[in-house]
Length: 96
Image (cartoon, rainbow, N blue to C red; front, side):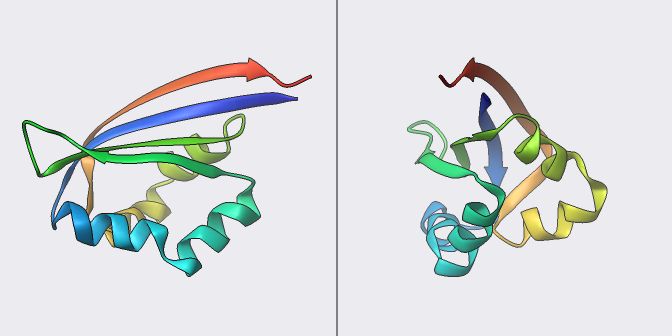
């Protein structure tokens, strides 16, 4: 099975604390669990408190396909994540 680690680097429209609270909410975590996605890290930039990064891990393409779907933009932005300008890096490994 291929595992993808997805790293998002983006600007926030709210505070980091508000964003982190949204991401860690039970409803959000349940949605990720249903998709088979784990949130490994949520952090804010030392230099820019309006910039954050999140590291996810799950099945290949799952998070990327959801993030790239224009219909999910309002859901992404509801957290405070500014969709435009998001830098996405993807890494794969094979689980034995």
